[in-house]
Image 1 (tube, rainbow, N blue to C red):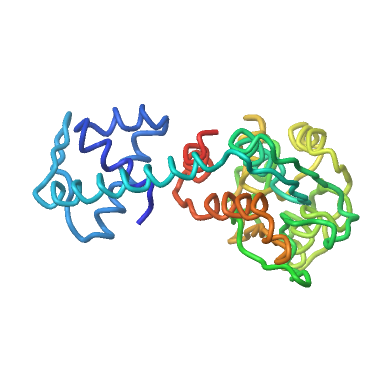
Image 2: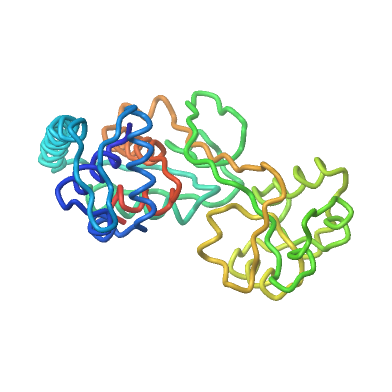
Length: 298
């Protein structure tokens, strides 16, 4: 059971309308409806009687609403008390971000608004010494000495192709079809390079990488121009144009982890930032990006 589920449920109970709740939280109506349905499945009861234009709480729904409303009030009061203690939080957080840079940047932006006196030292380069940082964000499976590792986010990997590429119309994309195309990737030892070669090797061939580019703006443009195909994470969906089709060719995922230096936990600023990252990672829904945006009011 998730906090956001309770907020959706209480809002829907008060407005007696999924559309009003969706508008309030700026999400699709289907997202609200599916979230409530999962909550009902988890509880094993029907919370609403549904009609074409209105929803009404069942008796079980009325009972659950009382508890849910009290839970939200308790959590909101606790959040307000924490906010009142935010003044005076200072310090420096040293973070190395190797994947999901835009996402982490949004979280840093949120954190800075809440704790304006906290300073950040940020690294995006692959050549770095982990000991120099408090927090690492990476899809590398390695376990760094003196660091704790937690899953930050997991996303599907898609094959990105220009929409007129014949691959788009195929029902079955075979290894032979893939190997006959040129690939676009970032340079060796980067995240996309590793995933591209991992997937291709699992299909029995080595990819012909004709374009290597570490500037993702240009890399995406090369895909849109049809100069090659590429394996990209789901988070790229919102930054690619309609000229690119994203195709699922298997259950391939990119797991991004947060690593935090155990010694750094002595710093209140670092502990608060790790809590923020952990809370982010705990929010799960179909429309993951949107739900997490709402969770942090991005």
